[in-house]
Length: 87
Image (cartoon, rainbow, N blue to C red; front, side, top):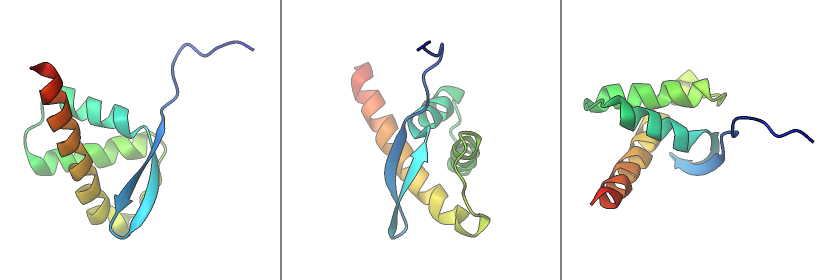
């Protein structure tokens, strides 16, 4: 079977409000926002939400606030881990 030239995004489970949800492409979304250089927290949240949707994840407009909070928490963990590797 032929192999794809590009790797498929991996799904990860995170906690959004009181629920666990699977998000496809979360790691790539985190990297994309990190490398964009955005520093404004609200912009980071919007960008993370946009990337999550771009990877095909359905996020109801009713739950956007909860998703933004959860994505920001994941982003903070990612930045802390990435910063430790850079030293």
